[in-house]
Length: 185
Ligand code: AR6
Image (tube, rainbow, N blue to C red; front, side, top):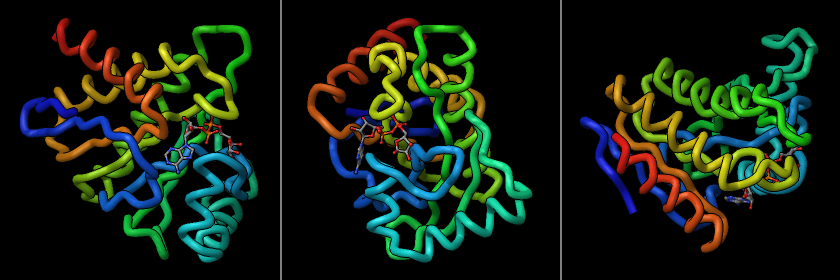
């Protein structure tokens, strides 16, 4: 399913993000940028060892050895992926609920979109950040993701944004969030 927002298109699909042909795909990484499980593991596996090397260089040079902060984003090439770029971001770990986690999750989407636009990219695919290992409740995560992306697309000329869900159940949650938010636009 998709909606048009000005000249931009927001699309929800079910699939494996490592197969996406958008110019950039987003990785739900951890601060170490050294890989992990879930979508992070799948992206590193499909991109090849060059991706880990690029992440090491970013940790050393751009981040001066520090971990990537929650809600921040960095960009690398996509190496063996169909996507030319990977934008790595770190979602919040769900821990009861303090409002800062909502802001951090919104920041992931916002910083990834801004970074893509700074690199003159016009298509990007996101996974459902933080809703796997990091346990963020998917209903709330979907509302935050879709609201952040639609707000951004209302003020920018970007192109295509996809959110790639890994299961039919996750897709349905995002679909109802999209419907809820577009009804109020
Ligand atoms: N394509 C699309 N979505 C996927 C794929 C895929 N190939 N594989 C999994 N998902 P998670 P997080 C979905 O756990 O919660 C890692 O170890 C998955 O079903 O990947 O942000 C990192 O290194 C879920 O809906 O990311 C971090 O340590 C969504 O992607 C930590 O997990 C996110 O689940 C990050 O946790």
